[in-house]
Length: 364
Image (cartoon, rainbow, N blue to C red):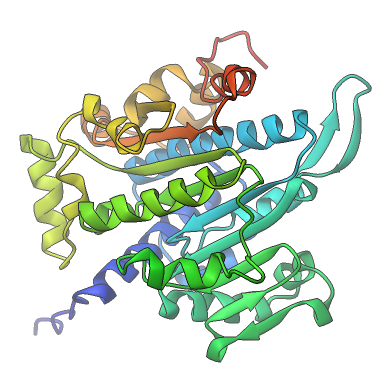
């Protein structure tokens, strides 16, 4: 007797299901020793029953995570050097644990080799936005797990709102929003209240999009970036952005990826304007940003991860599909850019160095 056919989610439910896929992939990479993340388990349903993901997925998750962490750490280091706090806005954040991981990291005064505080102390605000169904689930997990809640602050300073879809604390804020709607409806009421804006346009602010814009129409994603561009142009803060997603899906391998996702009722309209690597910086240049760079995960794995680390992870699992791994990694990219205030020549020189750097074998 055949097992009952599994009913696949459709529409927005299918997109929301990709967050569960990402969380399970991260949990697998943690269990196999690729990554360290003590905070992912509370965000995974029945984590003790989950099977490990294939080595190809574990390695891709590792490369993605290491590169994104380095870019975020570099942003925070620049803010620290300028003596200012910053803001991070993670859109489509899903089950991401970055805020809690940042809270674990100390700021080190390298001149005196001493700890001067937590990396979280550099944050004025850390804001996450996602579908209401996702934020409700995440807020419940945060409130349920003592360690997650304790990092947010005193219990009396942490509150739920809007039927449990929203969570506020002194630094961390979890908000429900549909980014496909016009920013005047989705972003402005949440972030830019005329009387008491949650997001300050005068502080350095980093936007994070991890596999988000690719699920939106090009027009919708352009509107989101233009809204932030206009908001910070009116202020004086540096605006940065990191985007991780698929691109170049018009070749034979890309079409296979697209068809596999279509079978799960997931489409990728946002990939159409980026048929090849050279088009990726246009994401920011079309909005007048001064800095725009990109790297594929394939190149990051080859040249931007310490060879000693590559040797370490090579010992974790046997991987036979090297060619397939490189094909997959070549269709994922991390693009980052920055929009600087007017007349900021010296500032541009400093922020122009923000990015990934090649690693040598003798680096620690």
